Length: 494
Ligand code: AMP
Ligand code: ZN
Image (cartoon, rainbow, N blue to C red):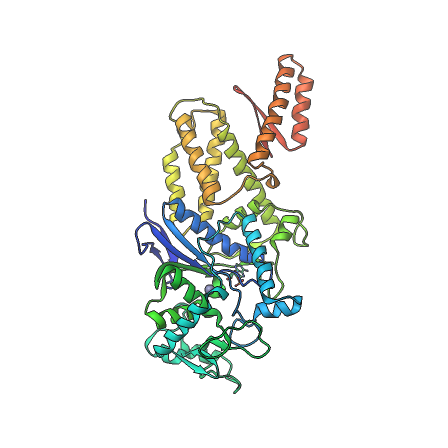
């Protein structure tokens, strides 16, 4: 079996993953700007990296996963002019910027928990790292890649691009960028429209401000990720991730800052997750073409016919590889719900399998497991993994008719692998909302069903077929299917 292949969007190619330190991975992922609720598009990107985090851990790597919170410095136009997104929201809601930050950070954490995303190892904030950002700006000034103008400090793209390939990540060149950029309007302190702010002077109205060697101001958006990834993962680290839309300017600028400050471009592998669309258009806060997690979980949205569980949505998301565009629709969610249910039912059937049949079965569990590993080794190809999981579902069904299909040892091995893929790697949950019960309610349901099945067994012993059938039909109407076998009766939830 080969090692893990990662599509490195910097090189534009699949590369065999070789961590800097054997057995360890340093991974940085750009986190949310906490000025409003996260939408399902944001959730998709964070779940894509959660899957990667989970798989790397499953493969035995010790991962330090850093995902930041942007709580200052991100301006409304994603460039250097305009209001700070957080400050703008604070005015709108008539609360303090830090209240905005708190409110939406809590919401983000609630959403991540609901979708069973593991917390990162470190979750640093931009406002908590002003000192590091000032130090990096000073380093860039002293290395000659930045200049101060009227209390702001800008990265000098023209100077840098004489000796460095600015545009190396996004594939743009500086001439194209110049022709596509607006002329400086005479109001700007920048020398060139390509330059970007490392530090911005705060106007009198700007609330979020800190003292610096250049007067009161605030850091540029791109700087926080360079400063915090360096602080927690080092000048060179393994993986940097984020959504596709962050490639330019955000990540391009990060590389320039890192190379300018300490010669390394930061990450050795750049990973970009593709977009979730709604009606064919990118989900985006600014256009309002969004669906919120809360709407999905309550079903309260014109885009939905009903509510869906977070686990079903997670299953839907991982049915596409992280690098392809995924379109959200109610029909697709309905299909995902059915698939999720089939998978959970098969897992339950296998976990309740009686010890029967020969020791070894016909189904080659090890070969199947290798196929699953290969799928994930191939740039975290979760749809192929899921297709293999459904091969296991078929094998479990075949085994119900013929226990020689899996055999006792095969069934035990398959159960262990399936449990890891479904719950540990894919992060799915057998929750009540999706039709299968969580651990405690599952126990209660099993106890109640044992009583019902016992009553039905007694009716059958007394050849009271009418009562036996009535119990079966009533349960079926409630979505519970009974299966009679040589070892007694079992149930599944449809
Ligand atoms: P933001 O809070 O806007 O900085 O976005 C947080 C993360 O969500 C970034 O990695 C974005 O690239 C990502 N993102 C934004 N919109 C979408 C979308 N429609 N689909 C997938 N990811 C998205
Ligand atoms: Zn970032």
